[in-house]
Image 1 (cartoon, rainbow, N blue to C red):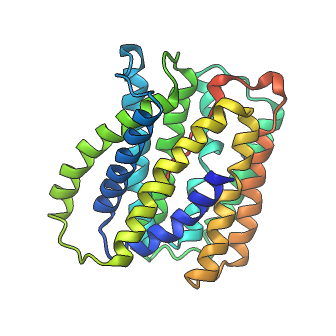
Image 2: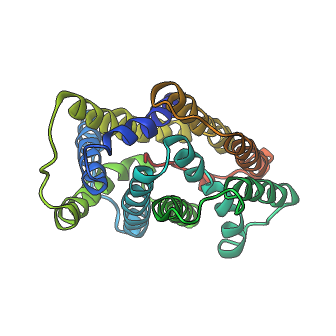
Image 3: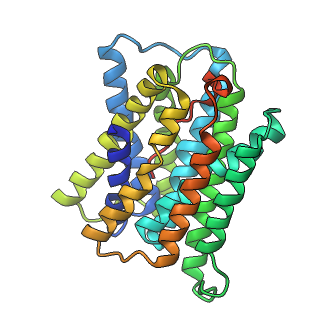
Length: 295
């Protein structure tokens, strides 16, 4: 539940933050803050050690596809798309993992998983009803496309995580992943958005701290610990409440009004993900541990 509430609140908070801070700087700063906290936590628990050479490929994959690719694209999309809708689109990731795992990892696409993918994609069709979607709004089209692209990058990272033979643990790599992501993101933000000239204030600082600490460091730590002590299916299904919380908070706090099509899409997409993830314990494996990013 720690991760669900932390990430459920992160989408509306990041939406407010993007009104002041450019997307590239928002991702760079929250990653840096989360990285400092993760290094401190690793030192305090005496778990800080150089990553094994055999884990470097997955470290690079998580950093580039997940922390940078997903983080930047989802923030760009969130700037243009309502927070509730953004969270729903981002959590279509498991829909892409199922067929990807069958294609690239040789995992069997069971009838239950196939039905889950079909139900979830039906939700996407409802969300992107071509008769109701305003295709003339370039910003809306780009925003939705950016978040869907982010979900695909996240899915690619998950597939690599599943297929990788781990030497250390996902948590032990987190400080190094955030460090590498920060080293890449800060120059990228400087080149893409200029120096951090946006107005600083107490609310902006508080939102950055939330995005970096509960939204990044605490959530990553909690999901890593949950993955070690709980079945992968339990963890995955529990996280499905995240976009629901985001919609509720965005409605009550930001004044967003979820449409009937959005609510129907939520039911179909999350239902499809739940259907595909709720397999028997014999099908679960350590490689199925899915770690979700903050927006």
